[in-house]
Image (cartoon, rainbow, N blue to C red; front, side, top):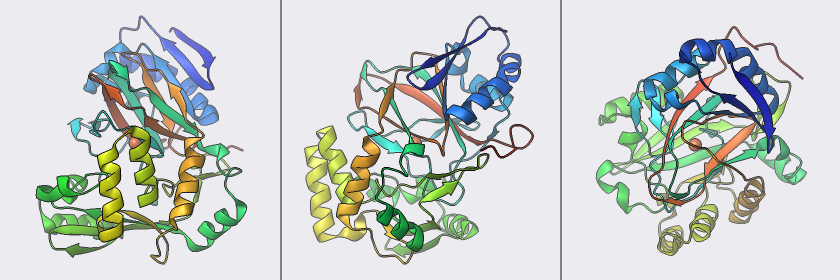
Length: 339
Ligand SMILES: [Fe+2]
């Protein structure tokens, strides 16, 4: 087996080349890769060209011992390609994607997220990662205490598919969020997860789980900042649009925030009171300070521990195609809690 490890900008790169059987290769390298992922939080597997095929990618992630998951209730506009393999996001090319841990607004977000670069962007489009272990000491202790005492709960407005483009900011319908066109099925999925909801005309107002700002790592004796309080608030959405140069989006968001704030998502305390805009903005810039680019060439896999590392991307032009799988560590390997 040809596994070469090297440290590059804090992530651990595995270079794979010349393998004939992906299942055998990834099974053989699984212990090494899992151990590195657990200790470093981020691993890049270079030149796994066969994984550009969705079926091979899913086989490879399974061979690493991870248990793949579905994306029901997630916020990113994306669709399934095959099996558990999804497109990374359909967020337009001229939008960056702000650092975030996948589905960090629910009680049990995926523990692992894996991206494979099918086609790199013509210009821009670099993947961005951020070490969230650093965040706890960057946040004002009083803020952390307040968020811990009161909890965090995301309020989302999910328009009907027919109106989704009228909504400022992140555009995702309830039909896409729950992969169904049935009101009854969407309600069953909400109830099954314990999420409160109400209908506002044809739009769904959804209250997701009340969470603590810090999350216990599933395999390590560590609590790590894992939420999206820096992201879901008008002030952050407006700042994000300005950074991207999306002036029209910025002015639509400003207007919506003034005239009909219920149209916009809001990160709230556990009792439903939205976070103050200056706090959202402070968190937004603190998280942005952790951004680090990772260049992915065709066939490269970026494997992230979704608690230890956040991910995002730069805006781009031309085509860019990344596929993604979300997963858990799964029983059997590396399950002893580490310090
Ligand atoms: Fe994501």
